[in-house]
Length: 323
Ligand code: NAI
Image 1 (tube, helix red, strand yellow):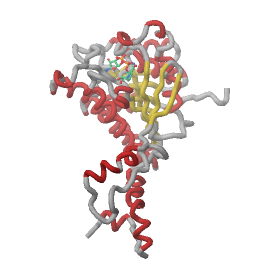
Image 2 (cartoon, helix red, strand yellow; image 1 turned 90 degrees about the horizontal axis):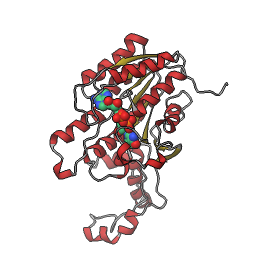
Image 3 (cartoon, helix red, strand yellow; image 1 turned 180 degrees about the vertical axis):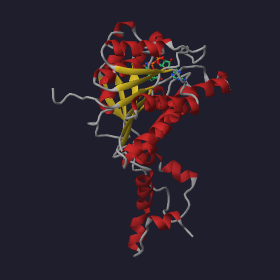
Image 4 (cartoon, protein in one colour; image 1 turned 90 degrees about the vertical axis):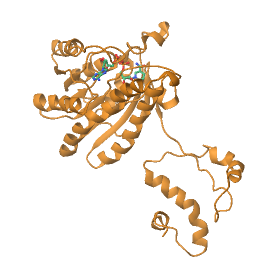
């Protein structure tokens, strides 16, 4: 059918695609015509162990058995060199990269006081640094060609918090910050960057998922959104979506209108902040900013009315350069 989303002639990299969600993304992309780099280190759930070529190769075999095109990459996303090698695998085999799904992940849960620096670092290295390590060389190719679709994988643990996952939550929210800036740096090059918080039963989560919903918790119920966001038809950049069990919604950072505490001409006191707290923390009539400049402009605008009344203009130059 004419409205079918296809990826013929396009090249996709999916990290951590040897199992779980990544495998499903790779299979779906290949079925719709993409050439896929199936990356997976093949380690244990906590990132330890020797690593194995088997998981990535098995997914490549599944794809080719169905007539698709794929190549395996066993590099770790956790080093800059590994990230470079993954992108190089796409360039050497297929000449370019159009789509990157940053999906590789590990878990090392511990309550915060028991979380050693090593435990913190290992999880940051795979999720946050891992996405940077692969995205940087891919972004460079995408900028050059004027096209790209990038997915970050966040988590409800990062967006909302989860006991025992300080390392993971920090890394997952870090990916949102990375997206926020890459959406701006990619805008004029037709590079769209979006973030998905999946909910699915995989080896990472199988022990915490309710058994009666396991069927609907298959990664296949998450993948359709990711596929759409990877396509040429995707109209959005910089968005966060929750996806699981065939249900989807958008999450966002919302900023309330707030209030100027005390007398606008003088430095407010802590007591005045306390007195204005209801207005400060209200999200009623809140809005979503597309970039820092919009938010700074609103802060300045909160003061521009009295200035204008005095016949002065309060432009941003004046604000940033008070001298
Ligand atoms: P999974 O464990 O099946 O998949 C993760 C894959 O990443 C594994 O195959 C693993 O070998 C690979 N990997 C780990 N370290 C790597 C490295 N350094 N380099 C390359 N590959 C590496 O788990 P799942 O659930 O499919 O996770 C996929 C992504 O979704 C992860 O980023 C995870 O944090 C995220 N996520 C999953 C949720 C869920 O409900 N399943 C919830 C929220 C987020």
